[in-house]
Amino acid sequence: MKKNVLLLFATALVTMIVINACKKDTSGSNSSSASITAISCSSVTFSDSATSGTAYSGTATVPYTGGNGATYSAGSAISSTGVTGLTATLQAGTLASGSGNLTYSISGTPADSGTAYFAISFGGQSCTLALTVDSGTTTASSDCTSKTGIEKVLCLISSLESSVTSTQLASLQISYAYSYAIRWSNFPDAIYGNRIGLKFSDMTTAQIALADSLLKAVSGVSDNEGFSELMQLLAADNYLNANGGGSDYGQGNFHICILGTPSTSGTFEVYFGGHHTQLSNTYINGTLVGGTPSFRGVEPCAYSAGTSFSYSGTSIVPLDQEATALSGLLTGLSSSNLSSAYQSATYSDLVCGPQKDWSFPTTSIGVKGSSLSSSEQALLLKAIKTYVDDIADSSSFITTYTNELSDTYVAYSGTTALKTKYDYIRIDGPHVWIEYSVGSGVVLQSYTHPHSVWRDKSYDYGGTTN
Image 1 (cartoon, rainbow, N blue to C red):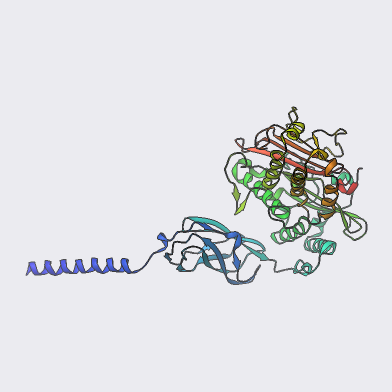
Image 2: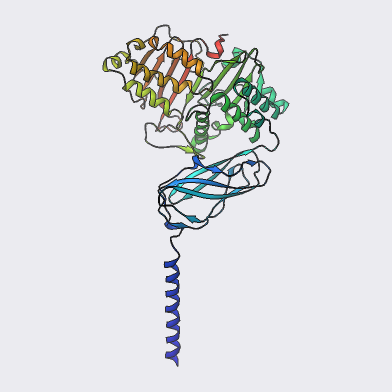
């Protein structure tokens, strides 16, 4: 009897093992075996727009490449950051053998307007989804969508000013004066505490979204230029805030200001500035007369270390195109022209940087544009465009600088790679003035720390000199 019982138990045990083994063999590939080679959050498509305070239910379609054909199960809910109140959940599916799309269900009620971020990870790859959440309290910015040019700029300024309190408005809009316009610096507020305007730390998420809409309209949407570059600069400062820099750094320390009365007559300026950033767009009688001084710097900078930096899904490479084009200009010069451009002096920083207004050298140095071949002049113009493309209405400046290429000088010091300390290049024309200077990191001292400026010898601050 005892042997029979043991025999029955053993038979049952073997049967269970076989059944479980069969279940495992016939279920197909699971999530742990699914793999892809790349995922693109920047190319995500959302099924619907989101509004603050309104229940949201939609999907995010995220492209991938290099799928291995495996089946995967539904994922766990991922809570949003930035704008909270939403979750994203991966829907079950089967990978393509190659390129395809993942689908995430997004639901919840956004707590505010701005951007909701979802940090997703699948098949060995990670990225961050960014869902824009519109304000539920104002539709003023959307009313500006159909407008163009100066009318759109004026509309967006009105939207922003309508959203703030009377106390905030007193900081946001001030009278136009040269003494106000020059109050900018490469330093953070803790060192340079003289900036004008309304600080982002004193604004609501909805107000910041309206400010972003204005900045996008005046700086443009070129790839890795204009508004994209400004957002990368903010990401860089947020990175410093979170990685050793402390509260002296971060988006909250940036300022936006409207100098003068926005109108198609008279003079006004859209001012945006903070650590390593200055946008100065001056309008006279409805025309953008000056897009300078335009200052950019970046830390962390990975151009010399081969390391990438990002913050909340935003890659930090705001001067990459400028550095690449400037280095390409130098390496594209003939040996004799490169020799003429070379300067033995060491430049530790910019000659006409912050607080050095209207101080252009009276004597130009380096190789003159008239000595350059047509292909070399094309490289020079390409480098100039990476700066002028940081404003939306750039055509008049490009036309002027193109016509003056023969009278524009190129000078450099250090190496042509522009990636090591004291590497320096200058473009000096009848109007255009561009400098790029490489220094050492301040917070992250093992990395480089470039500064760069675009000025115009006639139209900085719209031509205002005092």
